[in-house]
Image (tube, rainbow, N blue to C red; front, side, top):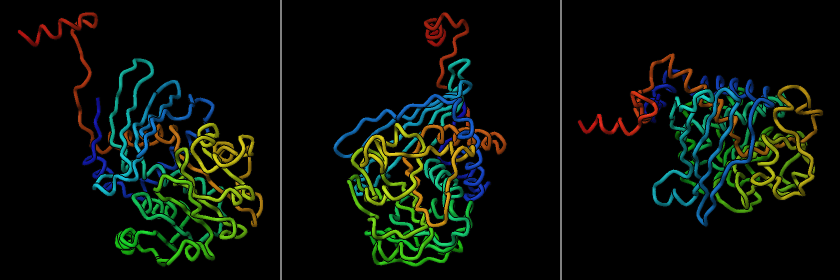
Length: 339
């Protein structure tokens, strides 16, 4: 079984380049979403607690199966731990044998940025030049790089209630060729921009964006609202927007639209990618990508990792599957070790 650990993932991204990796990963995601009907789909299996959530995200296309283990614990930062950690497994459906075990904390940030930018390529105005990012935690730099890689966005207006997070973002991104303005409020950050990305961590029903803050023609990339009871957009703003989601049964539980009636109309992203539905029908339209993350994106990410790791020879072989000489004699494997 192949292992792609944190060290190997870092070497892979250094070899490929983060923006190139996001661009290539977006291609994998687009291709998989365009064969949407081939995948098994279900809302993720979630174990909620007072302080966070632990989730399993499974899917299969009938040839390969994958799952991702991921958590979301906003209070972890206070004790020096990541808010989100993850790992994933890719397996053969024919044998049931797992073939790849991969770190996915870094990779989840990559695939989230890739999916966000891919959706924006269809939903945002094609001449978009400026993006606001509200929430400057672990995802923010990847979002900036993803939107530059796929849409050419170089002008950023950013805001976080935590000034240390703002300083961290500017330190990381200023040398990357972005034009960055640090805003004093969320209202100031979104003023005059073409795209707004919200990616906050607080597990609460917040109104990061209220209805009166967003003018005509803006595309909103709503990433932070990703579990029951956690939202970022005012319901009135959603009601006057065209809303696109990954998988509606999951997003109605976890996304921004959990605030709205169950029959509120939404479009699934695959419908836009195959051309069944237009992403943006008029310039003045407000579009929202209500993104909570879906297992097919992780399937794409694991295949991308496997392919790149094999080309670059970066993986390790690990022995965690018992292999008896006689498949029917598992006990005999223990006897051979004893002798």
